[in-house]
Length: 197
Image (cartoon, rainbow, N blue to C red; front, side, top):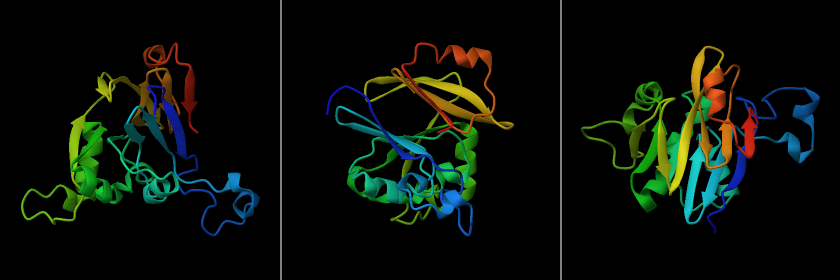
């Protein structure tokens, strides 16, 4: 691999995925492979590094499809299930690599603690449970992953604040309804901007 950032769209579907269960909409009945879309997530690769933004319920399938053998960390945009329900499926990476860094807002970690309590047990934790390192970030955070700077960008998914990420000249924003002018400033100069894909 090279220092060049390679982006793989793991999923570009709705929160229910496409096709939607039981739907007779023409898109859901389509045989076109472009109408078979998993929940939203992207894989970022450069040098020997691999990071994923969001791990929804299709995470396992996405990792197998792309033959991913290592994930150095996961960045979470927000707590909704279509972005976090694949959390348990990081276990094979834990077995190979150990504890995995997760970057998320404090509010998102609080939600994960409630929904995945067994992962965060401090006493008598089941030995096969996933193991994550919690790294709290917010809209003012700038941090480094694999030698590349990440700038967080806040937007709103209806009334819920969600985080987008700018990694080098690539910016990824999902589930965005509105965004403040000062947050748009962080995007300026981006060569590739993904919005609500």
